[in-house]
Length: 67
Image 1 (tube, one colour):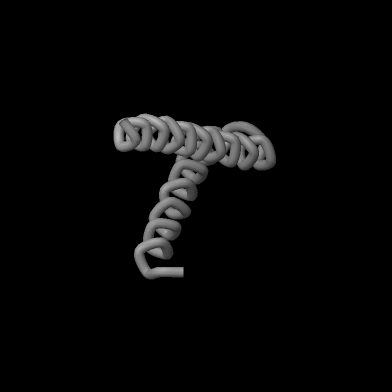
Image 2 (tube, rainbow, N blue to C red; image 1 turned 90 degrees about the horizontal axis):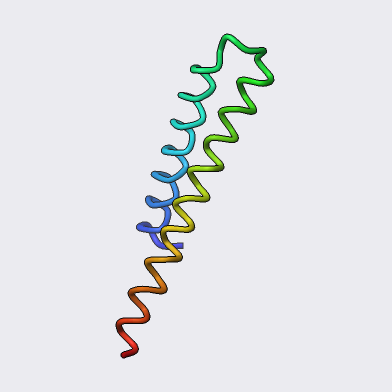
């Protein structure tokens, strides 16, 4: 694995961890299990949106290059 891919993965993981932590702290009034699940849920939603945006960009940009 190249260094750039490792850095990208590390940045993505850190970003998702930050989202999960922020949401967990926002739900701290709930039970600890529900707060943790809420944080993980938020992080997975963000990851899904990022993947969807990447797929759309890939289709649009690859569609332009083949024309």
